[in-house]
Amino acid sequence: MIAMNPDMATPHRLKAFTVLLLKIGVTAGLLGWVLRNVDFSNTVGVLKQIGFYWLIIPLLLQCSGYGLACYRWWLLLRYARANVSYFQVKPIYYIGLFFNQFLPTGYGGDLVRTYSLYKQGLDLGTLLGSAIMDRLFGFLVVILAAITGLFLNQSLYGHGYLFIAVHVLLAFIILFFVLLFWSRGYALLHRLLAHLSRFHAIQVVIRVLELCRHYSRSSKLLVQVLALSFILMLIDIGIFVFIGRLLGINVPVMAYMAVIPISFLAACLPVSLGGLGVRESALVLLFVSVGAGRQAAVLLSFLYLFILWSSVAPGALIFILQRKEMIKSQ
Image (cartoon, rainbow, N blue to C red; front, side, top):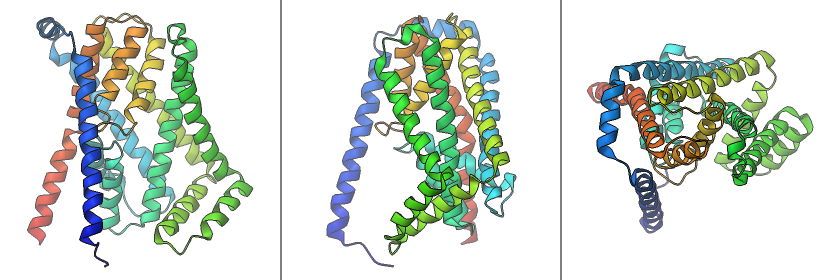
């Protein structure tokens, strides 16, 4: 193994530390904006009135959604002939969910779950390819839901930048799928990368693309993955509708179809800690735009955050237990 020169490592660490500080600043600033002018005494009264036991329902929905999301990833792994069962994947998937929320980037959990299975002997290209396709199908459905929701909600027509942003994202994803499904496009991309195949990283990229191309040959698998992605989107929207009704937010269900996917896309921007602050700001801004009160929108965003963090908490426990077992075995 080649050791990194300390003189080279220091600037890299300084840059990473600077980026982390900037993300902390963005997160704190956005949360401060969301919480400004919030009547906390009124908030406590509302929480007492609705009863926390009602939040068990959206919590169970969130956990069931994670079970389906894990199953979607496992289907992709199984098709790639990865010798791993669903029940082997699930605890690792939960660890990834936890780290997605608490690492500086919202994708850190994907790397954690990929690396965890790689250490168990699975092929790195297979793992990366399955994780990428898992993400892409999720993004595709979220973007389609966002576009549909935007067109169905006239109150959001003034936010022209939203229409532009989601259509640009859709164009990039469609381009990726075209390159995979169109033989000539895939062959051209493969040839271009082959010229750089002397680099190990490019070899991994080629392996990932080959696996993604392999997925495109199974229409049954693609339909299953797409259907699961739509169900997951509906579950997420259902969670917000349920909490919104508890809080007395009387906006049409169609409004949720726009607000939720757009907020999820905003949370994917690598500008805060795990999307924290960005997601809440987007939720408040958009819910107010469709007619909800600001106080109720803020409370909704933080109740969802409570549901989100509670549902991924088992991932932390699993990680701690696995670390203890690893230390004992050494």
